[in-house]
Image (cartoon, rainbow, N blue to C red; front, side, top):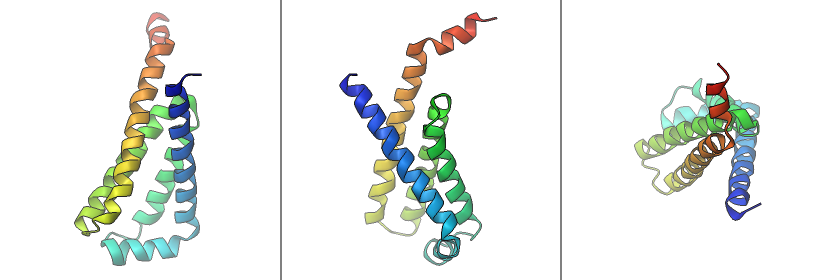
Length: 129
């Protein structure tokens, strides 16, 4: 296993863990998160469980090889939303986390696309007709 593979799996496991835990936490402490979404960010309360479920889904998708690329895309979108929310709320120091996590998810997205292309999965699907 080369260095790039080690980094790929480290990013994948890290992101899957934080999004599974973060998503479950948002769903388990829903009242807290709903109040925070409304009072701190001016967002509707229904967004808290939606974001939690989306985070969980993205984390789970990372762990399924056929869905890794889609899971990484979901996480990039969630982190884009978090970044915009924190810009609007003028939470300048908090912007660092979604930017770094979103960048890692973007790297994982690109690498997972390259892995699929390199494995011949895409070519095999084209030639099966």
